[in-house]
Picture 1 (tube, one colour):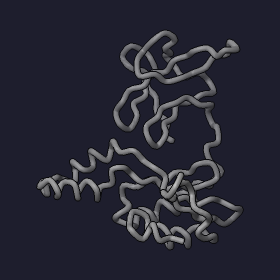
Picture 2: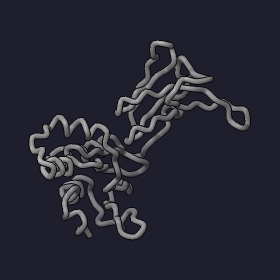
Picture 3: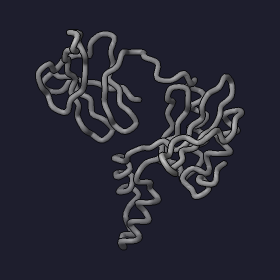
Length: 200
């Protein structure tokens, strides 16, 4: 999750998510009379000119903006472990638009929808082979991201799971366990390919 805030021209704290949509910080009241803080698409009653002490604005991978207590632990996964997976992901050209993020006790791989390959295929189908990489990148900037693989931490090792799509779907049983780098190198290349559905 990213954090970013700045007051706009009228003094209300404004946050623009990755899609360029502006959200404004507000204060309301809970049923018990306690203050609650939230982001809204329009400036209304309770708009604030600064972020309250002890709170921060954050954004989910799909651009949902919210307010949380500052320093609230999002994941127990070490940053260096996330970096290991990110490096393996970056080494695979077909995965350059995928994202990696620590969520709770796992490192999760997110797939964009639509995928660049799908956009290129669509462009060819309608006779627009010249559709530029820039045009595709602009569309990916507005993509929705869905989880497709995760590495769950268990002490010094990890277990790898893939998303399933039969029935109600959900995470698979553990495909394998072991050192994170070895798992990432073995399983990540299948993401975004037909081989993904054969992983067992």
